[in-house]
Image (cartoon, rainbow, N blue to C red; front, side, top):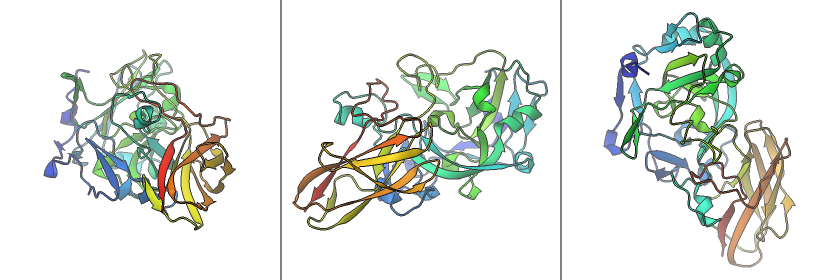
Length: 366
């Protein structure tokens, strides 16, 4: 790219206690996954639509940087703009703002079930279903910043670049995390967020500025953004070519339908008692309109009660009275407003992306 991105701010990798994270990482809230934190689903019980910052999942390629907002700049440049600009933090906050409540979800969320349910291990972090969170994001529409920089009608791609430490894979330095967006998406609903859940972005979630790309895989929602290239020709990066691309080689975009119970894995329940089970279902393409639950490995299904039909995800509940002790597998499947329903199997992806099949959640009845 020919630019020293680190000169745009005072950046230091955070390596306190060897964690790579800024926030506390209690075992009752998170499952450690290398440089990542997976939210425990039992930690979301009773939390409402928004996931609190202290239990919001973290996907880091390296470690969380600490960036001085006073020295930081957002540089917008490239042959797709007529007036390259460098925005300060205060300048961005002075622009007309927008607030949205949407999900950010890792493309590999559910990856471990390729192996445990379908017998086909996929490479990458073995996420369960805790690589997702919904927050209230406030910031500036990406469209606003691009127009202030004199967006050209010939622009086709926008490339935001993160300021986290450069990432190496297989001994090859891939540079800073970056992933192009087509101009149509960039001008539609993408937000440059500086607040999360009514406060400044925490360091682990992108302070001082991050992208939020509704409905798309989390790799598109670049954190710690410091540079945006706007181009009149198609752009690429390792995060769109190879990484976060499908088996057909095309960059991943929309997320798929998923469901999860707000229960610990292999949770213990009492026999002969009525239990109200809670869960959440979501889709990258629209609202959830139906959720069904099975207690007998999919032989029979019953409708769950949809409690909060938020656009980001639907919270639901269902009653169950297990009569006999033993091992059970709870299953939930959802249907979104496009008609997409979770299948029994997901076509294998060697990178483990977009697992959307019904997940069998084990519980022990005593």
